[in-house]
Amino acid sequence: MRKHLIVLSAVVLFGPLASAQQPEKPAEKTPAAKTSIPAEAAKLTNPVKATAASIAQARKTYGYDCAMCHGSDGDGKGDLAVDMKSKLLDYRDAAALKDKTDGELFYIIKNGMGEMPSEGERAKPDEIWNLVIYVRSFAKKEAAAKPKPGAP
Image (cartoon, rainbow, N blue to C red; front, side, top):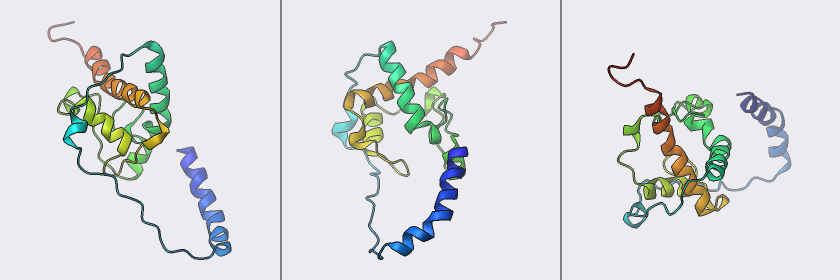
């Protein structure tokens, strides 16, 4: 939250100076994130096996790139999502991703979808596959934390 305030303050203070110094350019269109996943992408299976090191790296990447919207525990209530009033899936609920293949999740992370920007070429394929494993792990953690029926 503090970072958002610092960035917003910098924009408010220095934005008018930057625009006064630069000649006006026509607005560039940012390509919209895709809204459908190609069938061949959905059929992809995750070729990566999770290791302690790969999960640690995925956790770090998620913390930098995903948690601001999806929440640090995958609840879909990160600061930016709340500020934007975005309704995101709660990955802790196993039903949230049960109808998504690993290939679909890979495609969404790599290419973006809706309001979500793409990871694009910033991440290698194995890093994205590890993020898929990490995102799916939120539901497993939640299931393990719930007491079994009839348990004390």
